[in-house]
Length: 306
Image (cartoon, rainbow, N blue to C red; front, side, top):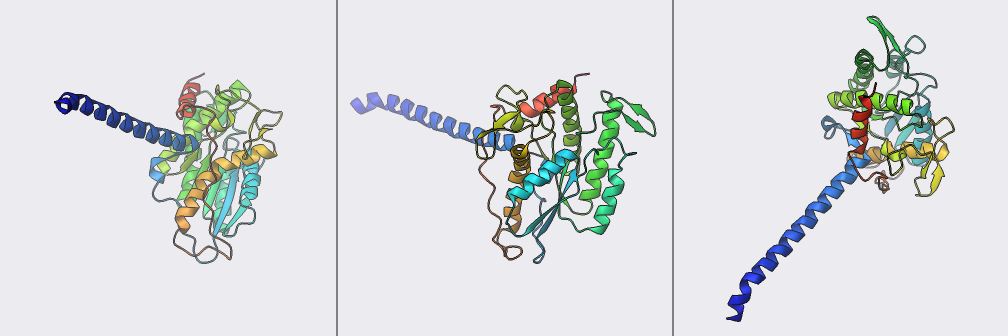
């Protein structure tokens, strides 16, 4: 009799516990997914094909392409992979260049020369620092806040991606970080929005850096945790470029994605060169923004300014 009377309560209690457990599992899944999205934003087309296994003993040749921020990425990646066999990191980035002033430095033309002379497996790309200016194209002269500017800039981004992807090179395009100047942040967000759309179409990995260098309120901060978690000055006085620890942090955004691909590509194979196999990606520090969608929500909002 007692059992019959308590049975409904027992069933309800078990049901509540099961529901609570399922809720906890769902929450853990969402948190894990959110953490992954906060670290890297990958074009859906790029998930399966990405990095081929190294051929023979040559390993991988990684070339950094871009502007002065690209120079910092090159320095940071050299530090990250120092002493590791199987990957060679070279700099082809150039100060004061970009995709707007092709009369000063024609990147598609120069890139064609590089690709014709060198065998490259991985390209890390970062452009936009010097592109906050009007574009002079065959069809006209376009201000930075115009739809025509974005259309022409997209065509130039497309061409770089096509030049690299058509040769089977794995492309990691790093997004511009938040800047101290509001107008420069508007420009950076505009460039990132264009590049991300192009990356999705071409199956290129776009690595978002916005949250990495924003504070908890989503604002620019020259200081922040370095790769060890220690608070350091990460940005230079111009509010654009990075200090040494900042270069390492900027490089770490693509390093995490790249190392995961290297581990997958070399799994079950002898290590390239004479060294050890690539170690797994380093533990990622939590995003300083609690919202994984903050970066792109903000990009969309800023992109509507002007």
